[in-house]
Image (cartoon, rainbow, N blue to C red; front, side, top):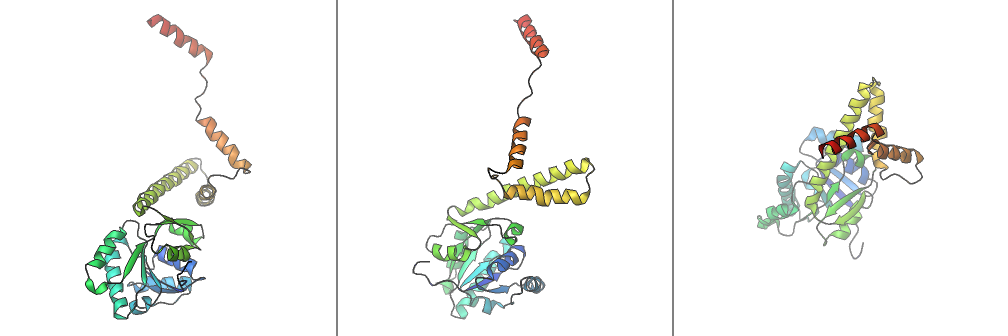
Length: 258
């Protein structure tokens, strides 16, 4: 980071699947605090990650607060936590990960409350699925904010790559990828089940082979097995040759019509 004090603490507001996965990935680099208005959800996350729970006032003492709440709750969560920060004389950087919530709208929400002057929110939209993130698969995160880019890249350096671009692209990309994955999983499950394959083998094929192949795509040049499957796929898409007898009949028919 250039001319910026390295971040030391991260607060995570929202301890669902994404918040918990992020907490587990970030705790080796930062002091991480967990917060959720759903205390039972927060306790489960604390048990899973071995991290401390915090109240709202303590959460906003962190350098950065990640908003991992459901999209419909993002506005109210930001306002509530921002007011806690102002009361305590704190100015954490709020980071919204909700791909369907425009960061410009969140800034507009803050701007409507003069008492929240000095509170900043930026977007950091992950192109990821929580299970892959939890397993350490590197991802790409998109932000439109160049003013806090050093901080965001420092924050995400253990998670993947931060790109500057249109944040609004991420939601549709994630949805299209999710649909494609679910379609492939369902198709493979139906195909193998129709062959009478044991359910445990079907699940392993989906969770290990299908998912593993996706992670290895595009395949390494030295992967001879994948090369052979790609050749098989290419052959399946080539129309079979027309038998000579059929071709001759078609030519005769054409000539008769002429």
